[in-house]
Length: 271
Image 1 (cartoon, rainbow, N blue to C red):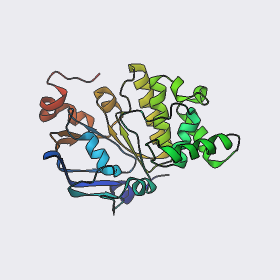
Image 2: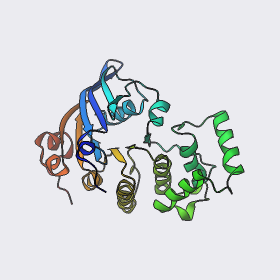
Image 3: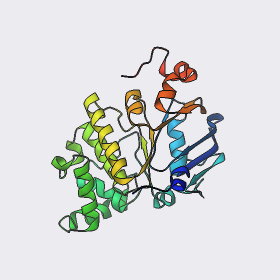
């Protein structure tokens, strides 16, 4: 079924003139970009250029000093993370935040039942452990959704393995699964391939592409691996010193002189 033209051209996410400083250092400076429905938009740039800061502002982790963030035209600037999550925004983080003594299935159910409760803590963890183990044999919608994403991401073999026993690449896939199981409209991925082997990265690209095609979700990706970025992105935004220095298709970004100078290097060639 074809989407209507208005839906395609109306941005899902609009970031307008976003600025934020930390201790007098301007981390983002008048940053603007739009993301269309179903698009994979990658945000790249040197270390310290503001990539993760932009994601943190979108997800509500940080409150910008100026600017506006809109989701389907609804202003979400400075809303708390749980409110933004309830609007269909999910994310992963650079650092692994899995519960090491819980299985793949149980970790994914964290995303299903405690949306965006990414920081382990006291009563929440005890309640979750009680729920998951008590209900592990129940055929509920939550378990069906979790098993569906497990199968889709090729994690069936480690479904009942504790996170402590998983390889690093498997742990990264579990984090992706935990974010995707909420069936978000907008998925924010922060360095999803960090620490992976080249083979694991290729597999990750395939799985993310499958998720996008099967669910229609929109993805904003922060990533350092340029081959991955060029393979998966519809558009790319390039940050340097907190400012947007370029935006375009992968082909356009590869040839942009400011990008070559600031980040990719003059001798960069893809493939």
